[in-house]
Every structure is written in structure tokens, then in C-alpha cells.
Length: 386
Ligand SMILES: Cc1cc2nc3c(=O)[nH]c(=O)nc-3n(C[C@H](O)[C@H](O)[C@H](O)COP(=O)(O)OP(=O)(O)OC[C@H]3O[C@@H](n4cnc5c(N)ncnc54)[C@H](O)[C@@H]3O)c2cc1C
Image (cartoon, rainbow, N blue to C red; front, side, top):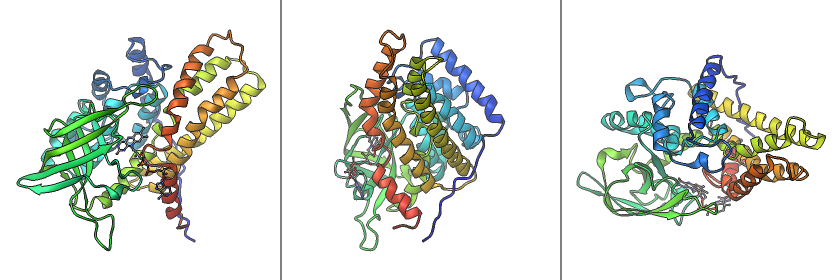
């Protein structure tokens, strides 16, 4: 049996301390001026263009990208610190987050030079929102069963079909999407999909809302009827998108956003327990914080490996699997620990609202970005077990 798993013991370098202090000061200022409330669930999911522009002006979007494309040539560990501070503060970073985390790196690798020069600096300035068009009504986990089609026409491609669960499509400027350009081959069922950059303002694209239990419009159905995509918006090899998908997933799955989406519940518990929690509260809280600390060390390790130019797909999958399961259980654990607090305790009411919201969103945590079962398949393969 081959065991191929490695979490390098990375520590955040000293320059990260100063950056963390800068990010905290910026966020404190934004909270003070009323941009968002760190304790109000849902704020962290919102799209705030003006906020994203201010983040861009600080140099915190495209942090690791080359300067000629508007980037800042900082390390993945520095990016980690900013992401962590923004998530822990419940900051409204959804307008720029996907572009920063995964769409930009794909453009950097596969877009023609003039497309990179046009789009990447605008992402870095916080001006663009991206969506990911992978899932379809008939294919989610089995990405390579996608049917939405791109047919070759003069100067580009004509697109027909639909995507579903597309986060942020209703505000997105662009989508990076997979479309079928050939049937699968006998030897390789993953053959035949191509990745395209789609301008969401193109004619022939309808974005229909899908509302979540919380009432939020988190995601959408996107329908393409004869939408046109020019040739220079093809990303990478025609029919060969499967070769590109794996490195994207290491970026998508390993970050602190994967276990800090409902961090406000933990903060709510600490506030409700007060400075002198009873033994049960202290023990339960200690356990949760110790688990979170371990997840954090693992996630920092993946950031360090990305910095070293590695592709830690298995390690990223493990962080997402453990992180999302921990986060999914968090509202239940917090509810148990807060159950015996006196009703008149001042911080109890906000905690009840936070718990109600976190409980409603918890099921999605182990589905978005790849389900637990799929991740475990990837991990098993990485460990040589299947
Ligand atoms: C909040 C949220 C945001 C999302 N945002 C986006 C987005 O922006 N863009 C996008 O493209 N998609 C997005 N998705 C879709 C997400 O990627 C899919 O829901 C996910 O990949 C699962 O696909 P599915 O829903 O079709 O379920 P299915 O693939 O039908 O899976 C159903 C069940 O079967 C299990 N299963 C499937 N195959 C296997 C297997 N081989 N072995 C074992 N078990 C298996 C799954 O684990 C799951 O439990 C989002 C989803 C959520 C919840």
C-alpha cells in the first residue's frame, strides 16, 4: 500500500504579524462605520462592491499574483492571514472572493496575454465578481457527465444548456464554466469538456434565482440559449478540461473559509459564557478551540505547500472534509453548551439568532465545493487505498 500524505509543519513567518494587525485595524474601521456587523449572521455572505474596492485598494486581492497583472507578489501564507481575518470577522467579501481564490489563478495559467492584462488588474482592484459554472441539473459530483454544450462557430463558440447552484451568478461579471465540446471517448470518459470564460452580459444568458431556507439568494440556475463566447475566452486545452480541474480544487478546498463560515457562533458562545464559564462550559469550549486550532495548523500547512509550488490535492481534501464536518456540528455543540445559561444573560438573544441561522446553513457545508463522500474517494485514492 502506498501512503502519500504529508502536512509540512509550516509556521506563519514574522511579516504575517504586521499584516494581521493591518487587516484587523482595517476591519475594525469598517465595522465602526457600519459596513457590516461581525456578529450578524448573513453579513459574511453578502456582496458589497464598495467594500471589495476598498479591499482591493489595500492590495489584498490577487495578493500572490505577478505585479504586471495588478498582483502584489506576496506569499500564500500572507494571503492566508488576510482570508482568516476576514472570515473570522464575518466580513462581506463575497463580491471578490471567488475571483481572488480560484478564477484569477486559472486565468493566470490559461488565458491569452491580452485577456490577462484586461481582466486580472480589475479583479485586483475589487471591480469584478466571478461565478463557477460546473454543476448542472443532471451532474454535480460527476462533473464529467456535464451536458451543456459549446459548438464551434465562426470566431468562437455557441453555448446552449444550463448550469445550477451557481453561487453569485446574479451579480457576477464573468463565469468560468465547463461545456461539452466533444462526446466522451471510449478510452476516457472525462474527455470532451472545455473550460470557457463567459461574459455574463452576453445576450442569451438568463439567471434565475434559487432561494435558500435563510431567505438569501445564495445561488442560481443559469440558462444559456445561443450565447456566444469568443475564441480567446477558451481556457486551456479544448476537450482537455479534466487535466486542469485538479489544481483548482486544491485552492478551492483548503482555505480557512472552509471552517470559519459560522465562526460567529463560537464567538457568540464565548460572549454568552462570559469571562468565568462553569466547568462544563470551559471544558466544552476548550475542546472546540483545540479542534479548531488543529484544523488551522493543517490549513496553514496547505497554504505553505501551495507557496512551495506543490499541488496538495489530497491534503486540501482532508482539510475540507474535517473542517466542514467540524463546522457542521458546531451549532449543535454550542446549543448544548449554552443550554443551561440563565435566560436573563445579556448575550443570549444574539446567540439564539446566530444558532438559528447557522443551523439552517449547516447542511450545505459538506456539499458545496465537493461532497464529503467525493472528498473521501479522492483521499482514499491519494492514500493508495482504491
Ligand atoms: C451552497 C452551495 C453552493 C454551490 N455553489 C456552486 C457553484 O457556485 N458552482 C457550481 O458549479 N456548483 C455549486 N454547488 C453545487 C455543488 O458543487 C454540488 O451540489 C455538489 O457537487 C454535489 O452535486 P449534486 O448536488 O448534483 O449531488 P449528487 O452528485 O447527485 O450527489 C448526491 C449524493 O450522492 C453522493 N454521491 C455522488 N456520487 C458519489 C460517489 N461516486 N460515491 C459516493 N457517493 C456519491 C453525494 O456525496 C451526495 O451525498 C453549490 C452547492 C451548494 C450547496
